[in-house]
Length: 65
Image 1 (cartoon, rainbow, N blue to C red):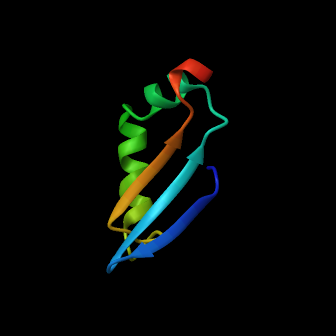
Image 2: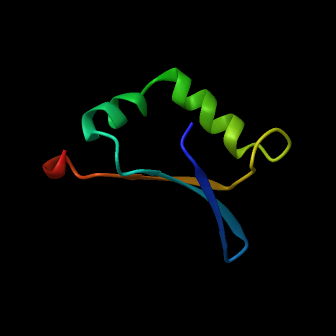
């Protein structure tokens, strides 16, 4: 798994994933898989993972892939 960064603002915690180096089509295809859904649940779970209210994935634009 890529490094994750946790930020806090206005009482909410957010996890940011920097996937800028991943090809756009591959990254977005993975975001639609059941494995991704499970990873998000584990990552944002406060007891088992980092814990967060939201998740932000930074992607490269399609034009730059």
